[in-house]
Amino acid sequence: MPFSETEEKMWTDLSSKKEDRKKSGKELSDRDIENRYEDEEQQILIKINREKLSSLIEAMQEEDYMSVSPPYQRRPRWKSKRQSKLIESLIMNIPVPPILLYEKNYNSYEVIDGQQRITAIHSFYHNQFKLESLEVWPELNGRTYQELPKKIRDGLNYHSLVFIIIIIDPDISLHKKQLLKQRAFERLNTGGIKLEPQEIRNCVYSRKLNDALKELSQHEKFARAWSTDSQEESNMYQKMEDVELVLRFFALRNVEQYKHSIRDFLDLYMINASDFTDEDIILLKKLFKDTIDLADKIYGETLFKPFMLIPDGKTEAEQSQPLKEYYDAVMVGLSKHIDNPSILINEKNASILINEKNVVIEETKRLLREDTSKIFQGQGSGKKNIQTRIELFNRMLSQIINSKI
Image (cartoon, rainbow, N blue to C red; front, side, top):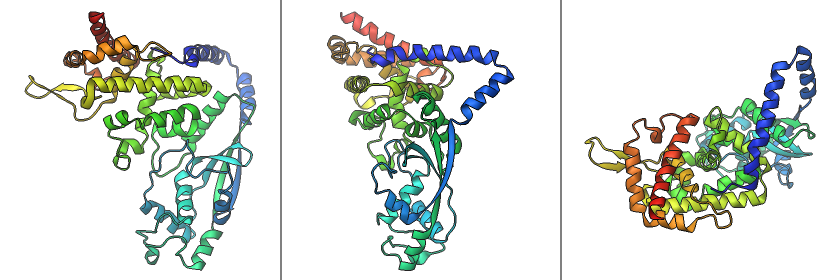
């Protein structure tokens, strides 16, 4: 199973740093703790700005000022009805919560909290939706910004938003910067819709890997298997759970490094991925595509849907919905037989598995029948259970391949 060059060494560096922190934590005196506080107190600075809507819209035309839908932000989840409610609040001169920004460069910002509000305001000012379901101003329903009476437009333009801007010390390490951004996002995000773990990662971590995860989540066979090809109707797509599934594949190839919870482990992989090169990303993208193609050739319409005994106990049918835990075993298990970094697919192994796909399917059914602890169905999320289901699936594939060599 190929690893990128950076993947092969990233865990060693992290382990030594954690051991150093563990040792130092036991020996810290109160004075040591105070010194640490003094060192870290200035790592995050805050400034507060007020900006009129008209000035904000004008400033957003400038390159790199603030993207309305930056690639790191979550997928839009506000419908036009909720966007209209925000515009009505602004018309009524009701204050809205502050927008939280991270200053990445001078006068260049990333949104920590408030993307949905900024998107709604920007879209309305560009006449991209009509007001609807207004309660206090129903006479404005059906109107765009341009169709509002002039005095109401002037009132909107004069309304100010409050921006809280977080500035992180530029001299600290990239890993520390990302960790501080994550902590700030998790603790300061106040949006009305609870953020899912991958939405937070999307806002905080490595752009290179993050872009690759989102691109791969649109892979035709992957999207079809998880029913995310109909994006507007897919709750999984809206919450970026499909993107998290791609991340699970990359991270769980390193399952021996698993610690704490799956959420913490995926966060850790993303932190380490900040060092990935373009070559690392190219290798990982090809690995995912080749693995999903191989899985689809074997399982077809039943991809990631585990076979289950139906109530009569004699016949089998596939689960109507795919399962994450079974997906982990299939993808990571198959990737262990893709071992040529220059070609990626081991032609001999892949050909055997494809030619013997009926055997693979029958052996998969047997494996699931014997799974009395139901670890392929999601029972047990600890390291031991994850390792067991991946190893069982890998062993089954290895036995089929070895019997034909």
